[in-house]
Length: 287
Image 1 (tube, rainbow, N blue to C red):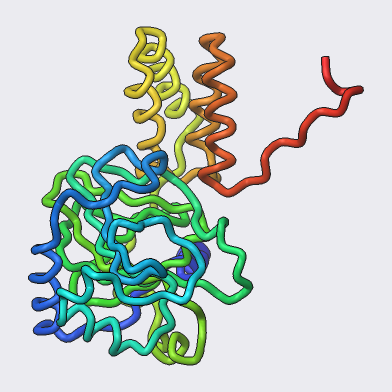
Image 2: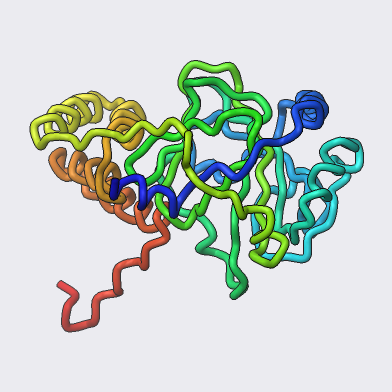
């Protein structure tokens, strides 16, 4: 199936991990304070928090990812089982962090790594420590539940998002690393064989029109965030071309004659999906 073939270039399960080790790591992660860093606020609905285990400063609250020669943070020094697991992979880390996604929370459709200038390959690995069936990664028009007990791979340069609908908290160990021989050896078993995948349906024009009508009504009453979130959440319900939810929000505000918000969301689409900003008009093109 073509959809699964495309999906396998974006996400995959690598291999099972030792249950005893995972239990120890999970227990350590649960002792991490819940008042974690809240970087990338514009990428989420709220409820996404992280603390760093590897970065270039050693400060766990330093959560803005960048190319670096990573070292252990002061938090990882207090997590011996997690430290041993991360070291055992033999990877060259750029970043590693504990990430908590609370119930009824979303990471909106976005792409990552656009700010990285290093020419080396970058990859993201996930280890679910605490999860539930209502939490999922959405990428390539499909919902994938990253199940506990395995190491997973994600290529975040593709448009993707994450959700935790009903809870409890989803807690993942996330590692950003460079492609090298150790990475290739670790991911030799990468694939989607046996992984339950929910392919999302494509919406009809009538369905999208109904959602936009609702958003127009909400925004017209002054409930702008409710209107915006109602459309952003469609990314988790339907398979659509990249950026469609942002275009729907732009269209909503254009219908209301709110050009300021329409332009702001058009600009936000460029940021979230790492698109080039529109060219600045020349003097001849300016009105």
